[in-house]
Image (tube, rainbow, N blue to C red; front, side, top):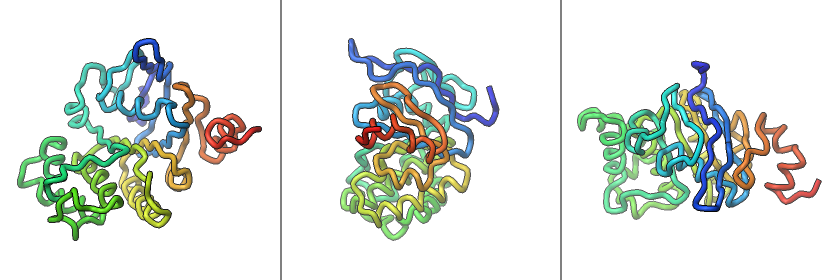
Length: 242
């Protein structure tokens, strides 16, 4: 395996009974790269994330992180191995403060001691522009700040690979731009990112490469401008007839 490849997905499939959600999807993600994933609803994007993070078992194929097979590894162990993720709908511990949410991620996901976690989580809060909300209950945050917290909790586990699932969804244009700036800064410090997103301009502002799924199959992959210009992608994703 190429040492520059962090995530290797080979022939991954997923079925629920007779319903096939993903069919033999293969791709690599290089260290420090941002791969954007596009596709209409039901294309299998979140199912793919769930198999990488361990929330779902693969029906077929293999997934490797830094050359290590992930088959059989539960989600908490994959987190400790370096996989962090966000969810489409933010899931903070609503009764805890913003800072306490990060402490849980740092201690149980990142394996840091309580003493180490305090300084580390304070730095993550500053990076995610949440320092002034540190003592606020997570359930009282605005949508933008809940999105920031979702991202901050993933970062608190100190991931090598960050999976972002529609993190810009539901935000205004200005809020989306603020979040894109944050994702750029995370990329610039070397974190490898795979990002599912329907807000196309947000994805195009950061992604090095795009992959498009439709009905569980990969239909395109390559430089963003080239992929978006493909007639099949325009038809499937944008509803534009070639």
